[in-house]
Length: 87
Image 1 (cartoon, rainbow, N blue to C red):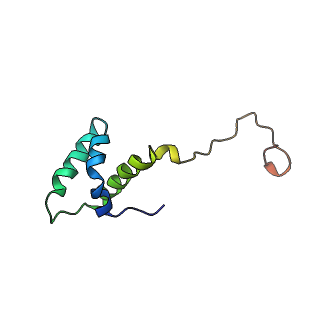
Image 2: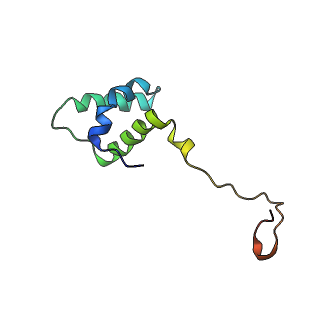
Image 3: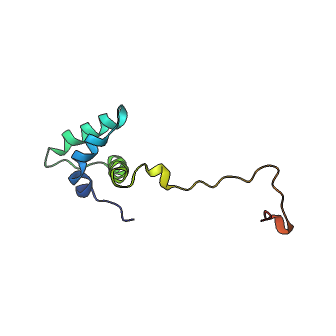
């Protein structure tokens, strides 16, 4: 998936503000919306990373659910030759 540019995030930002939960997300979204009203304003690198995550969450849901976490084998897992887990 291609990274969104600042302009694309800002295009969708009003929807992000509406979808933002409560607490920190909502406050961040509102602050960015206010700053974006100024034509000379550009997000910092850190702000843009968060803006991309929030915009992506709007389209793809929670980004954490898209990351597959590898779980360690159980302690009693049986291994065959070469230390690989038996199928």
